[in-house]
Length: 282
Ligand SMILES: [Ca+2]
Ligand SMILES: [Ca+2]
Ligand SMILES: [Ca+2]
Image 1 (tube, protein in one colour):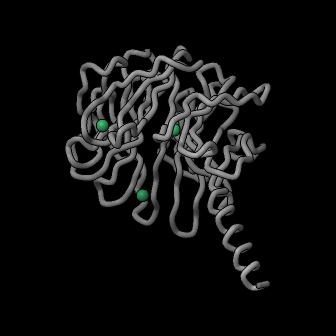
Image 2 (image 1 turned 30 degrees about the horizontal axis):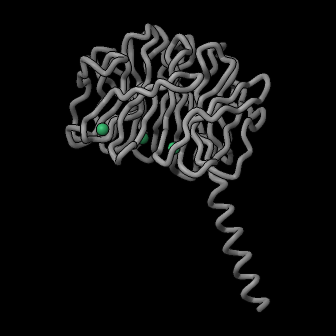
Image 3 (image 1 turned 30 degrees about the vertical axis):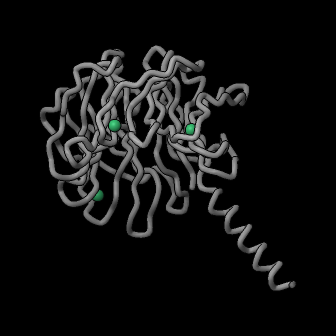
C-alpha cells in the first residue's frame, strides 16, 4: 500500500511539474531578471506590452484550454479576455491599444482573429484551410503581417486589418514565420529555415531585400522582437547547451547573449520605453 501511495505521489508531482511550464518574467533591458509577473502552475506564454506600456496581453492554459489574458502592470489586475474550449494564442496589440489580433483554432481551422482589448466584438480575418497565425500589426495600423501554411509550408503574408488584400511576401520551400514589424514600419524581421537551419531574417515591408541576419548552423533562433528605437532585435536562441535570449545590434550585426546560460528565458518583447523586457521563463 505504501509503495502504491509513493507511486501515486510521484505521478501527481510529475503531473504538477509538467503543468508548471512557463511564467512571465520582467527583466531589465540589459537582461537582468527583475521579477515574475505570473506564478501560475501552467503555461503563461507569449507576453506583449500594450502600446502605452501599462498592460500585457498573454495566453495561458490556466483555465483549461488556451485563452487570452490582459495583465494591468501597476495593479496586478488580471482579466480573462477569451473563454472557450478552442485555443487562443499569440495576442498582439493594435497601435491604438483598442484591439488584439490573435491566432484561434476554432473548429480545427487556425485563423487570425480580432477582439476588442476590453472584450467582445470577435472578428475572423482569415478563412483559408491552412494554419494562419502569428499576427503582428504595422505601426500605422493599416496592415497585419502573419504567417500561413496555405501554400504548403509556412510563408509570411500581409493583409488589411479587415482581412482584405491578402498578399504573400515570402516564397521558399522552408518555413518562414514570426514576422514582426520594425517600429518605423519599413522592415519586417522574421525567422526562416530556408538555409537548412532556423535563423533570423529581415526584409522590407513589401517583401523585397530578404536578408539573413544570424549565421549559426548549430543554434535555433526564433521569435524576433524589435527595440522601440529599431536599433536592435532580441530573440530566443537555443543549442549547444544554451537556451536564452540573444541580442542582435543592427548597425554592427553583432550577436551576443542577453541572459545567463541557465536562465531559460524565451519569446521576448521590449517595453515601449526600451527600459524593460518581458519573456517566458521555462
Ligand atoms: Ca480557449
Ligand atoms: Ca486557416
Ligand atoms: Ca541558427
